[in-house]
Image 1 (cartoon, rainbow, N blue to C red):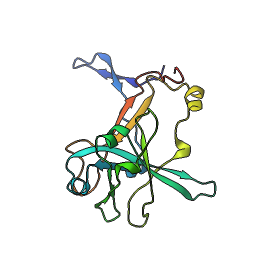
Image 2 (cartoon, rainbow, N blue to C red):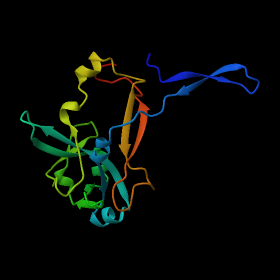
Image 3 (cartoon, helix red, strand yellow):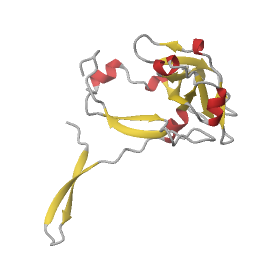
Length: 187
């Protein structure tokens, strides 16, 4: 069983010892993951004014063996696209937000996994972004090998309504735990 906290020894007002269980704080997440964040809106006007928010997502990239980016993808949930929010907002190096008017037909749904991707080609000189490398994705063999399952820590990144930023994306991170076994691996 994974330890999710620790016992901390203390003294009462009378000087008597006691212990308190303290949960570990959220672990520090690497800054590069914050720059992977994208926000999705229904249209350009909503994205520019940061209104009528539809969802969030991230950038993922495949890197060829020679070290060059071969493919970059915007990734989000299919239900966000199906609900009419295909327009992407991304931060710029100037500290503002830029908008990419991506139409719904450009998004590719992945079966029944509530996952959609859109191949993109974004200027590295003007936009402030990083991406999750595809070779860092969790594979089914990793789940089995490392016995990953309920109780293991995960983090989620996205937009908190009312705290999204008006000039640029300001994603939040939340820490949690895997809630149930994988239907594919049983772990």
